[in-house]
Amino acid sequence: MQQYDQNNIFAKILRGEISCHKVYEDDHTLAFMDVMPQARGHVLVIPKYEAVELSDMNAEYIKAVFSTAQKVIKAQRKVLQREGIVQLQLSGEEAGQSVFHYHIHLIPANVHDMGKHEGKQANQSELSTLAAQLRAELGQ
Ligand code: DGP
Image (cartoon, rainbow, N blue to C red):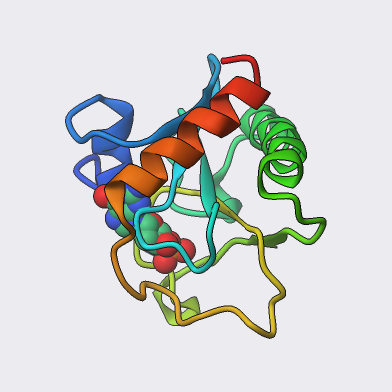
């Protein structure tokens, strides 16, 4: 398995070195819009903990990530007006993981209709609008 690299993109987002469209933040987690969404409203939830994937996650942070994911899913359902949200997590390069900081994808889509992973960059103003709507729903 891959070693944790402190220069991965999500570590830089956590340190504020790269911007993101933030949806939710607490002491243990950050949720933000995926810039290459597989569906409109695709959100990523990450822990403020250095883990490549599930097998090296800390139990306290797993709990926190899933708690944040629950909140985000509820907000996505309201804002996007759709029931079905795909929860996806890739462990390892062979599985298709491309950013090596643990994350859960929350994708408002039917799994059978989803586009290719890492398709194309989304429109930044649309991401900004969606993030603001989700933040408002989450009281952030
Ligand atoms: P995975 O392949 O499961 O490791 O997913 C990585 C996701 O991260 C992928 O859907 C695209 C997204 N992504 C890559 N770079 C950035 C970035 O700089 N900002 C944001 N918000 N998302 C990114």
